[in-house]
Amino acid sequence: MTWHQPEDDARAIVESQLLSLRLRSRGLVEKPTGVNAHLPPQPRRIYLVGGASRNTAIAKIAGEVLGGVEGVYRLDVGENACALGGAYKALWAVERKPMQSFEELISGRWKEHEFVQKIAEGYQQGIFERYGQAVAGLDMIEKEVLNGE
Image (cartoon, rainbow, N blue to C red):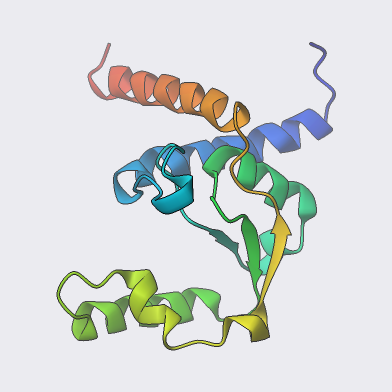
């Protein structure tokens, strides 16, 4: 394979960030249920905000690396997406019912059709699993570095 700079450099940077996100969030995702129960653990949806949500190449790579049973979505809530996300997490911590998921609480409080748009496919069989092998390698390398090997 030939490395075409800067195009391949840009893709490698995006992939490395998303692989790191997948590694660190793997304990937070669950195996899909219902008709998608045969799929590996992954988020139901991937939401992008800000500049990443306006870049179709980043959205495509996010779906390939992170999965997302229902796809990758642009969440257009202005320039305060991080603050809004933090506020929603605080609300969930204080007001959730026993065993209520974050998605269950928040879905009752927003009008998705007003500011959510699907921008890319999520899970793609074969591609997601290959990135899973890369995540395992990243995990192994990080552990070696932390153990001083």
